[in-house]
Structures are given as C-alpha cells and as structure tokens.
Image 1 (cartoon, rainbow, N blue to C red):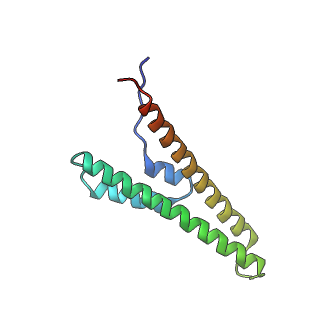
Image 2 (tube, helix red, strand yellow):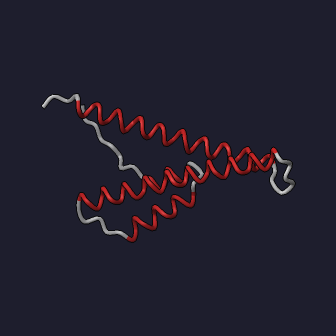
Image 3 (tube, rainbow, N blue to C red):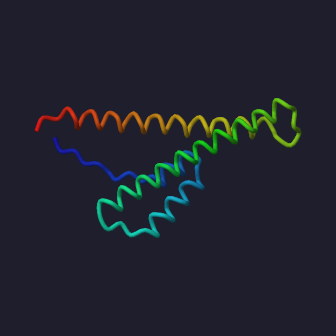
Length: 115
C-alpha cells in the first residue's frame, strides 16, 4: 500500500480555526527562519505548537472575561460577540485535543511496529 502524506500547513489550519493572529505569527516565523536541519524543524514545531496553545489559552480567557461581563450586564459587551468568542475558544480547544490524540496514536503505532 502506497501512502503519501501531504505536509501539514499549521498556518493554514490556524487561519481556518479563526486564529488569524497565530497564523500570521507562524508564517512570519517560517519565512524568517531558515530550516537547516532536524534541530531547526523541531524548534520550529515547538515554537508553532506553543504559540498555538497560547492563542487557544488567550481565546479561552477572552471568552471567559466576556461571559463574566455579560453576566454583570455590561452594556459594552454584546451577547452575540460573547457567543462567537466562546465558540472560537471551544473550536480551538477541540482542535488541540484532536491534534494531541493524533500524536498519541502515531506514537503508539510507531512503538507497536515490528523491526
């Protein structure tokens, strides 16, 4: 069976998930850094992943803050904006969990391979 994998474009995935700021930072880091070896790839992956997690954490914090403001009847925060922020935070968290599950599954598959 011939299995070909397309390279994962983290910036594109982040922009589809509604995290345009994360996507821009990833694209800027990728363009600025010249990946010369395996160490560069690991560093780039680690940086991209940690930035994505920080973005998800910020989205969750923003959603929680907006939710609290709506509960306190703050007139400057609308219910619609709050619901959108909550959905973005939930989508980001779900994508991070799915990504983690795929990594664990790949690790398990590799460890179960016979050499």
